[in-house]
Length: 79
Image (cartoon, rainbow, N blue to C red; front, side, top):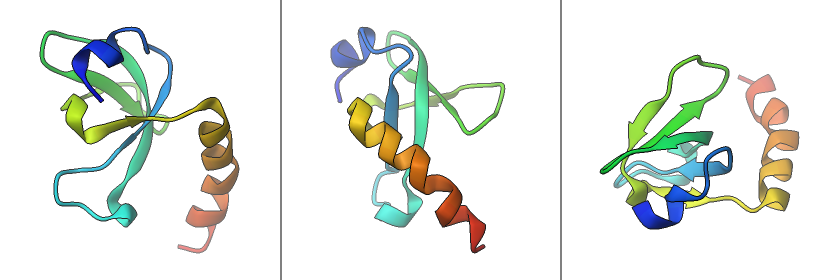
């Protein structure tokens, strides 16, 4: 994702994959704001947002976001 793409996506869900990370290290979050260099994303039920490099973010379609929310309790329930 680019900073320009993120500009109109406040409130949308994204998938964050850290550089060099694997699929297991990916996290879903919601864009709360976009700055001059960073995209701010809230992960989980936290009250604060993390500054993320837009290149590490992938915008989720509404269908992908629904599927991810539906599956999230199943993934965390076994841990």
